[in-house]
Length: 121
Image 1 (tube, one colour):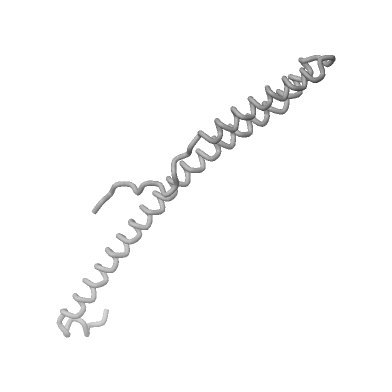
Image 2 (tube, one colour):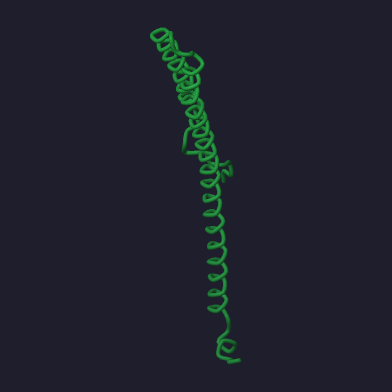
């Protein structure tokens, strides 16, 4: 019998899409800031950069929080799958043991002498 834990049915978490989305967001924010500063030089660049960073910072935080939540979900889910598999094995073993005990009791009742089986207690 192979007692090795069953590998998770879900693929491991890949961080590439999330890192790529953060990099694209930062680059697009910098490009947007540069274009606005170039087109409207009369405005204060710190106000423009503050507005862009005000949008980018919570978005990056949300992407990273989603990444961590997905990783946690995959870990918990794979552990739950392993737990349910082990629970099924243990319940089957209990059922086999109870069935064997019942079979032994039936065999004992069949082979008992009739004089003992007719005595009522």
